[in-house]
Length: 454
Image (tube, rainbow, N blue to C red; front, side, top):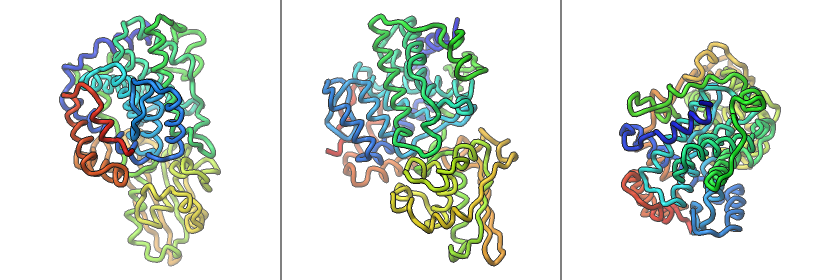
């Protein structure tokens, strides 16, 4: 069997009734986390644009978060996915390629609502999407070859949407074939000065996957073999692929990749979280920030390439560039002792004090730190004071890591922090209760009511 056929077989064979309780609970936690991120993005320019687009197709199928609007599942997936991804606050996974598996959650929710699939089926689809995307991230890297990691969402969401739509095995194969062939995304979306599309690229991949699953339902087929073919994904896009379906999670082995996903304490790129923790630890020791002579950040290869190698990362002009800038974010953490949504406001980005600190900053890859990746995302921050005093903090891992996962109380606090001023306490309680009892729900109206700010 080719790879698309193997993934389709896995999608059809995954028994949601036998998912380990921890896996089910982790899916609920990731959904709470995703909804928290969406709340924080209410009113953002990309969210307004995506919602306006969805409003052009008023169909009573799938709901747009924060509104009373209903539209097609693919447009709802795009609008809600944009909300979840905008702040760069949703979960992540680091392997041969980095990525954000929770980008699948709003798309799975849109399809589940449109198809009338109950909560247990939504949970199974989420676990399936995580498994497919993250195992593909393990199998091959894309970013060094100039392609975006969201190309894997084309496959994961084609499989998950097919499962929720109850497509047969061959239809699922065709959904994967079409989605992957027709919608390859370039890495330019995360290079140089970053645009609003950084937060939309994954949502667009999910939208395209849903569209292709719908086409497959109506008999459309796609090019095959999409991975192994002469002009296929392996030869043209990713190069060598270490794909082995026997590694995928099952009820027997319990090794579901969702258990390895990472969650965030700050609304910023995941690879620089430990640098933020280091800078926050150093802040009380600095005294007068004007006495800082120099800042040096040692990071991993991927940290340097993605977060410090472009000149735009040293003078970010957009929120999207700033939250992927290692020098800016460390400067901001040293100035303020924290990183919050406000850290990326235009006035903060233009702050001359941050620019002055960046002018005194250097960044380099440390091979010893690179050797710890992807199991850890380490960074080391060294501050030299004008007095000659040297202050240093190295952080290998932090809250939200595999070894130190966030708990229910952490996700509850993050949700309520993002919900402040968006939905009232009663709605917050209702939304949190809905997700934590998702496996007993048969419709989603209560969740969208609770999340509505209108």
